[in-house]
Length: 388
Image 1: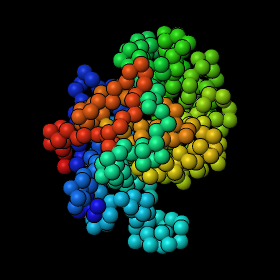
Image 2: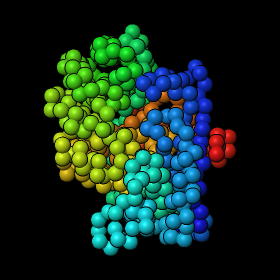
Image 3: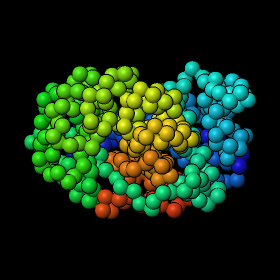
């Protein structure tokens, strides 16, 4: 299964004004991602997804160039089945032979940021390739799924206090979800507004619906602690990214000050960052993004850390169909996986890039039997929204 070509397309999908939402990231007027394509001499093609930003809007030109001009040529002629070795080759660059021989990393300078995103997208495509070549889903290659369906939570929630309950209820009704996530933080203007919105959501939804809150890393640790005290009676399921990913000790301080579970990880890269979070006892839930943190190969290592430290695992899956599928396959095989994120904002890359639909029925998503990542790419969609 020798690799003959590695390519990447920047997909830029405008969002109609009436479907846009606004958060601390600003108005979300497009959905962007890099679609990675790896072709082999056997005629099997694998697809992956890389993201230049955690949010929806991003310029992916540099990311695609990195995949095609820097990492791709290193992989051409290699056996696509050697996924773990190829990960080390990309991560360690010209010193990969030392890393492989000696059993520890000699990483390149770009061991974070878009270089890791590029590696992530390639890694997803390699797993997709392997599954397709063997005629089995990726979760089978990871040790098998632990359940045929997994619970999902509706992810969205940007409305002000007087409308937030209705917005969240609308999300819940679309899939009979039993849990929903809302955004809080700097986008609310004041801490008091975030607190009021959470209370309004709990009052409107009642006690039986799970509520998660995501601050996108926009508070200081003191603000996050005040928030936790103020919403203690709302019994939220978790508080996500209360402080910036650059303040891991601040995150640990927040966790030590509350019994609200703390979730984090969408802005982190590789197992090494998650190791630090575990050692600091800074999180209850790890949320690595498969298209950012290092791909499926690295997510399995991160999940092993989570399991060893009694930390739960819920991948960040706000992205396209390939990001969603990759997170789903890992979560299904993971001993600490327990729930899936299902984005309810305008997301054409989730619902239109793939021929298949990841339907939510009674709040559950079926873990499919389709080979590879189980995603068939709509090439007409790609042609329509290719930006590079």
